[in-house]
Amino acid sequence: MCESAAFARMIPRILMHGAPCRTLCTIHSKVNLLPHRRDPSKTSNVSAMSTLPPDSPMNVFDRKAKLLQRERAARDADVHLYDYIKDEVGYRLSDRIFDIKRKFGRALDLGCGRGYVSKRILSECVEELVLADMSPSFLDQAETTEGVRVKKEVVDEENLSFEPNSFDMVISCLSLHWINDLPGCFRHINSSLKNDGVFLAAIFGGDTLYELRSSLQLAELERHGGISPHISPFVEIRDIGSLLTRANFTMLTIDTDEMVIGYPSMFELMWDLKGMAENNASWNRNLHLSRDTLIAAAAIYKELYGKVRDDSTSYVPATFQIIYMLGWKPDPSQPKPLQRGTGEVSLKDLYKLDQIIKDTKEIKLGDDDK
Image 1 (cartoon, rainbow, N blue to C red):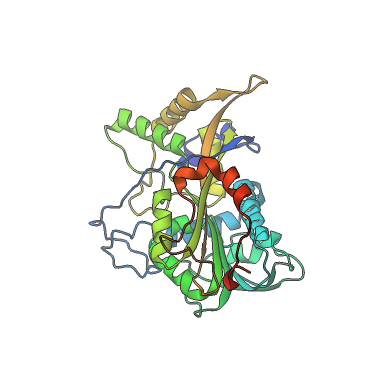
Image 2 (image 1 turned 45 degrees about the vertical axis):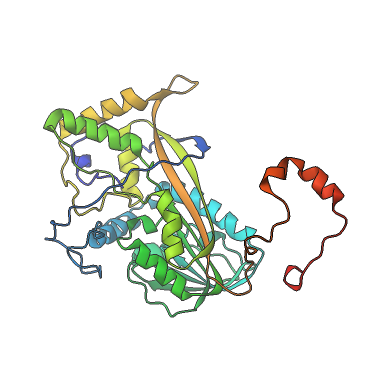
């Protein structure tokens, strides 16, 4: 998400000593997003991992760079220190799996990372779990639970090749926001699901890191008279429903959470993003940030968004918006809405609902309702 490849050389070493302190401040719901697009004329370096045409407007992310970032993060001895966000989202996503009162024969964890969801899936819910990730090192570190048959495959999420109708459930936790062709990915996922199979995913939304984005933009605008993208583009929540519907999913459920986490300064946030392998991987990213621009951005960040705790210590908040989505592959056994005109109660009479229920003597159930 954030561009921090070279900033460690520029910042005083004192910022890098010790583990950064973090505080989970608040969690609430909110919807608002900012779209970004890549200039299709920039076609010089297109990853061979992508099947998109070089001039495609959807070719936004450098998949090779993202693979290198994940491999570097996985080989860090302190990689577990940066799992706090993905672990929390994985916990919430796995909790939604438990809400589905069904045992799934074969499930796929797409972009499993270090097993943020798989280590919480129980044998009572899933018989066989396939873990897939583009990073072999992350895949080796993925944790699982006892009693579940596990198979690991190195797979690029952008080029899925699973057999049609091969999974009862597909899960993805904070991985799909790096996909160039998200509509195509959704179609492949739907194809790999059996009828009445379910797709659950969590993805970063457009309000993610808006504080960092605006601080960097203001600092660059002041010093260079223009801005360059340092925060990767995110999907809009209002587009998720239409994308899932186009991919042949039905009975959709989409909601959002916001996790606001406090950091001592902007530099600890950027360091942690690098440890999460969430560095910026856009093709049009700026590979260099000058020292004075970074220091100015940190000062702007603190001035605009800085807060003080009860113990008088200051911190800067960083917002992570999480979009959760759930969709089912159509099947004749699924409930269907009644035909238009078959309703017996008008919406204008809803205020009299208690009286209507009291006056109802008998309710007839059809064969499909039993």
